[in-house]
Image 1 (cartoon, rainbow, N blue to C red):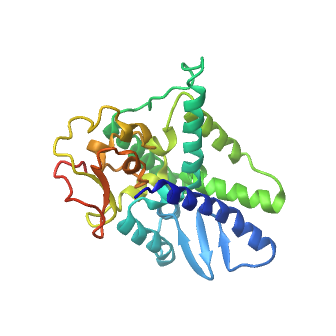
Image 2: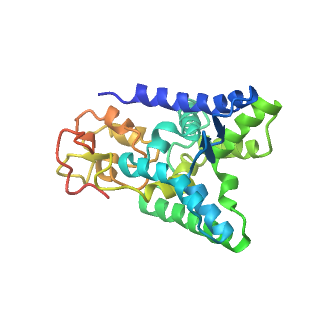
Image 3: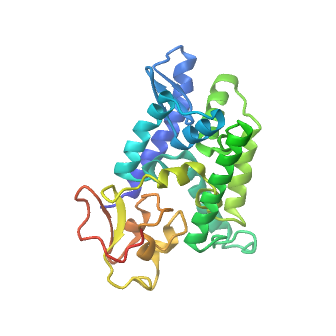
Length: 284
């Protein structure tokens, strides 16, 4: 099965939904309100767990309302892994576009600028960097009573900018932050944001379960690539080597490595999905 077409459809549907909400509200229809920080469906609140974490530390208290808003996303994460990041997040869609553009421009005479390699190759170091950023931002939120990381919440910023564009025909200064991040990712720091900093990705990865949807590799020897071309490594949006890091916390369950695999050794597993038992050597 090829997942890429369905994934692209899902990503563009979410991107359209981002503009649909403020458009609906502009006609005074408020069945759905909010942004990708937090949404309200007819009185039912749903919020990004990373946003909830910031709110709890900034407020210095835990409320039932906040925890309830994070309940549905947490259940989805426990069942399907980081499906938001891999199949829905509008920023990852833009980041992958930046990756494609870098690949085109990098073939010209500007290879020194449009670098193909991720700045932090080791996934352990990348995870330490990402959780260090989350921990520092959350600690500062508690100390300053300000949800600092929400100001760099890329899907929330995109959604807010879409709302401003629809309602006010304008964008805010935060749109410039997105441009800077995408420009850096397209040039000297490939895959920078999602891999090293994104609070949503870091918090989401904490809710992985052993029974949820995940990528596994059936190769018995995982010290090297299954094929000479390393197709899976080339397509991973998180800069992983899926043949040995399929279960890494950075994995967003996008399925691109499965589509690229020529040896059929990569597959989704969970809820009886997959064609083989999970490899004992698969990275957790």
